[in-house]
Image (cartoon, rainbow, N blue to C red; front, side, top):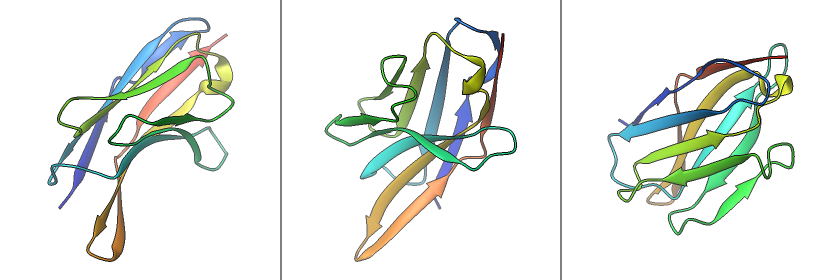
Length: 118
């Protein structure tokens, strides 16, 4: 069973940085890994995505401030968040996707909370 564990959340002031990490177990590789976030009282939204070939995509709201990366083993994903703003506050979730024969699969972490004060 695939398990994702996030870490690195916390309370910071606007303009500061945080680095989130997510480590996967139960599978050696994935077709994509991504970060999502859920602001208080709002729905979960996509933040950034990375492929095994290190192709990346970013939500326009974080482009230029956040950087997604993986390790060499492709079983961990990081999110470097710079110049944080109060509207970046939320619970950040790690997501991994893969194919099990013809069936798409997905797993989620439990989330790590990020709070940015003004």
